[in-house]
Amino acid sequence: MYRIMLIDDEVGVRNSIKAKIDWTSAGYEIAQEAANGLEALQLLEAHPMPDVVITDVRMPQMDGISFVSACKEKYPALRIIVLSGYSDFEYMKAAIQLGVKDYLLKPVVRSELTALLGKLAAELEEDRNRLREQDQEEIKNHQQLVLMQEQLLWQLVKDEWFSVSTMKERMEQLQLSALAGDNVHAQFVTVEMRIPPGRLDDWSERKDLLYLAFQMLCRESAEKWEHIYPFYAMSHPAMIHFVIRIQNAEHDRFLADFVRKLKRDIQSYLKVDSVLGIGEPIHGLRQLKDGYASSMLAWSQGTIHSDKAEPDRNVLAMTHSFSPEVERKLMQTIENLDMPAFTKQLQAIFTTDRDTPMFVFTFLTLRIILLFNAIAKKFELGDASLQSYLWNCQMSVRDYSSREQVLDQLHDMARLVMEEVRKTRFSSGQQMMEAIRNYVNENFSYELTLASLAEMFHINETYLSGLFKMSVGVTFSDYVTRLRLGRAADLLQESELKLTDIATLVGYSSSSYFSTAFKKFYGKGPKEYREESQSKSV
Image 1: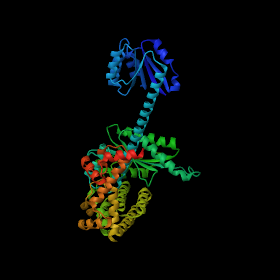
Image 2: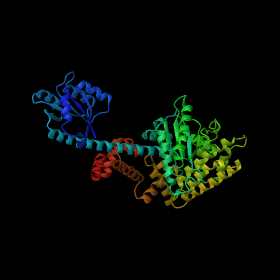
Image 3: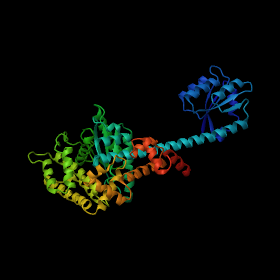
Image 4: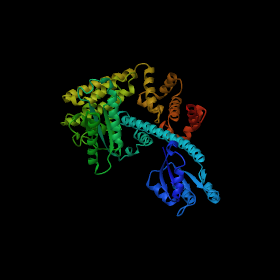
């Protein structure tokens, strides 16, 4: 039903127009009436916007032309029908100059009014459909952006980084600039859904629906609060993590309110329990993994009855032994298959000359398991069974009964990861190439070079260049270009993202260079490609 505002200084004229047709059958309702343009403007400011305004031109205080002029400035999309008599030529001339396309001569003829309203209804429906499509496209684009944000956040806490500057650039591209600063102050929260025994006995095959509901509820909860960014691992859909930017001195109360309401909503809407962990505050991107590990540590100590699960304070201050340099050396021992060196590094981290508190011991274990997982992801081919095993070890770290058991477990995990590295590095060149290709497929939107890949996979750069072309059939540069432009083509077909946004998302810092490369590859520019794709889908 479309809403109409009727403006005329004579009540009799307004009543006559209202009596001309069956407005409801025509798809309209007379929502508002006014005696002049000034009164109409006041109604427009105070009430929902009508779809159509029918206004006389001769009125006291503010005539129809002055009203149309004011509406053109304040409400340019408003459709206006002007009523005029044969003697109102000058008024109509002014109305036409203001862009009015629809008018009726007085006295109003029923057939002319019906025909005009029918035409306007078709135009209004077309507008609504277009706005609906735009809204759906915006929702789709937003969902895509959120998905990429979550993937990046998970990568930041789990995977090996290229560099801090590269990650900052990527975060800015995905509208995560608030977390990308050197002085960013943030905190992690981990929430796990616990399904009570017997809850799904009758429909256990639909557990995926409960997981989906849990994830949606957590995301919707985060959207109601500022500076909260959710993400999760697909391998563990019953757990979601939040990065919360610390804004001011009221943060502790803000955080307490958020987790209390989230825990209550999970219980109220999903009828399940939850366990949460609140990590220690961190400063800067370099501490993101520490913040994540501390929230996992707090989660491991939490129960379904608590909404204040926090690690022992100053855990990060007590873990200076796990510096970025130590992490790098530890990674080298694994990738170089040097178990004695690994044991030596582990002894340096877990020194025996001081009594390491158990919560610090557990935290360091979590950080090392994260490192194992990053290496496994890089070298594991085929299934991801080792990564799944390492994730389960991370989830069960609280169950270890002694420090000795933890150290033994870390050595066992190191042997498994080294074996995976060995199978890839020292078997056929084809297996190494597959690992490198998988890595490029996942990270092509970053600034990749043969030199950086050669260093990362411990291989000679010249040898890698020849091996890549022999295995893939094209040069490394051409392969990355193909991946980037293929993803760009998908985005052009699937979304209404700006060309500059698509360029940055697929790895081009310059939109003009992106357009040139795209046209060279597809024979047409990205704009033309999008227009042709959309015309084919109609």
